[in-house]
Length: 231
Length: 334
Image (cartoon, rainbow over all chains, first blue to last red; front, side):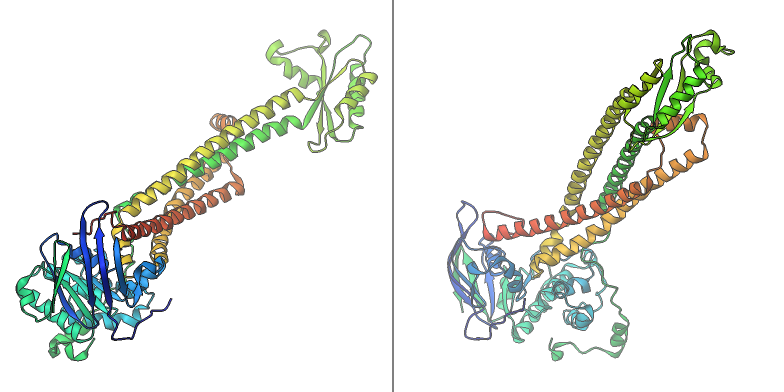
């Protein structure tokens, strides 16, 4: 199956329209969300704990489907996409999980190369790219180290590198600075800005006000299941 | 990545980094962990037991068939003594008459000395057959696959020598056939039970070992791996485990039979060997037995691999169910 890339720059990467979501018979976690994630955009997603940031990220990552409303990703209505096509769409989205989700038995290099490996690429074809990216995120000296030996910041950067290795069109990061000190947070933010400058749309879910204050960027604030956007 | 964005490196650093070597890429599914070793042990034990049972049942069948065959290969003509009967002539006539029937392959008159030896346990040594009205016997060997017409032979014998009585061993053969069939049936039942236990144990042990790897399935799924790719990675891993385990168990079972057979052949005519042979028959399972062991190894390997594939596909399906029904929860949500 080939990767289909939409080239119409006017069409947003992701479009939400009156999206609502509830778990089981519980109250709606997210209500009437209507917004776009434009191409090459940079935004923070914030709000109090339990506001639904991670749930919204999961919707953006095709890990959940809404209970109502319309979501279009890469100009396709996700409710009409067959199940076996989701892996192809996920490959166009990079995600950095709050808990990193690195595989402990694989080295930093192997974890970062994993998305390419699952696409069936030969190692010789991506080795140089992976090493270059690892150097770019400051892990050039840690390529053969297993995740349990890495510090929190190093794990975070390895997770970011894994999300970026296949050059996704959009990067979703869940609390990417939650486990690191302020200098490392600043460094990671610069990394995201650099990535955005290279053309990737970025959504960073964070509580960290000081982090958001460092950049003039769009803010999406979730509160009681509703979303307010400040451009 | 943009070359300009990469920080400039000092020559020393460049030298050091050039020396960094990536280790050979490891398997996506870890090759060795506790659950993997436990699964391998379980498979080895179940394979060993299944192979032993298969060999044992084939031995029982062979022994039962041997009993049946041995007794079916012979019939006996018994001639009772009579005042007007020339016993030696009657024995020769009866043998010759029997051999005229197609399906007979040979005849042997049990001579006076052999008859005396047969009666020795009851009547003691130095028996004079002329003093006692002891019947004499003729053993006729027959072609099992093409036996003679016993009724016609019986009629002909009675007409020629009224004192002759034909014993075709049918009563014994029928009893032995019934016993052999029952033994083989019990053996097959035991084999079926052991195989069922093996299948269930292997399936559940494989699923147990896989449950410890669910996080790997999730990560692969989230980095864009297709279900078939994830399943094939786990299949390869579990195929290796099952081949090692089943191969070890099967090899040990085959070695056990080979050693028992070797011991039996080296201790022929000793009390221990005779007793073991009487109880279990010959320990040799033949090439069909070894083929059966090989088949069990293959079946276990396929079973484990198939279970691994189905379980991984099911895990991915469950992850997708969570996606399609937010009411289902997993560990990753706010």
